[in-house]
Length: 97
Image 1 (cartoon, one colour):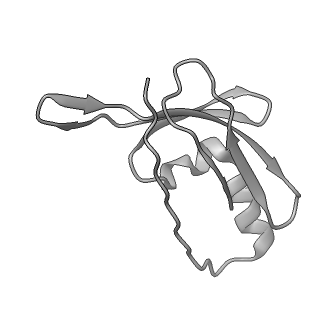
Image 2 (cartoon, one colour):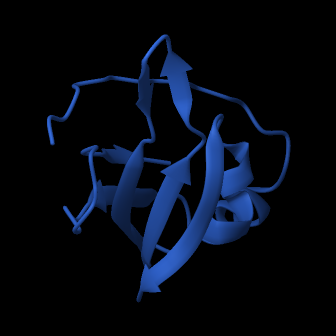
């Protein structure tokens, strides 16, 4: 399946202690509801998560974004994620929180 290149950058200032923000985002399944359009997020292995978005349709064309990402963190102020190219994925992803 073709993959569509997309870039998203969003910056948000949180008025909470850094440790609290880190803990919130390290709970990937729990914090996934903050991502617009996510239908569900589930564990797919150690520090690896499968994201499935709500279906989008325009006329006769519909699409469901799916990707699986592995997360790594430094335990204090940085969480990185990168797509693993699992079967059924149709989106590449990588980023940092």
